[in-house]
Length: 84
Image: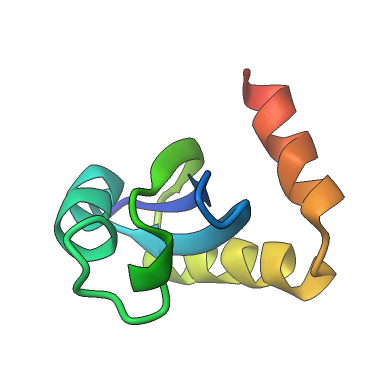
């Protein structure tokens, strides 16, 4: 089953959030902007900026870990730029 790694942006906090999900649009609407996720609640509303699909959850989680391990806003913004 395919999974996506996605990047969200909160204009009110000027922050990015990186996650993975089977349905990133549902997760954004229901959990992030629906205030069901404690770590993203303060940044509502969140905007979808980027996503990449993977064949398995394991692959998606591995790439999410790569992004988060870099701890780099520049890297996140470069991913968004490459897609746009």
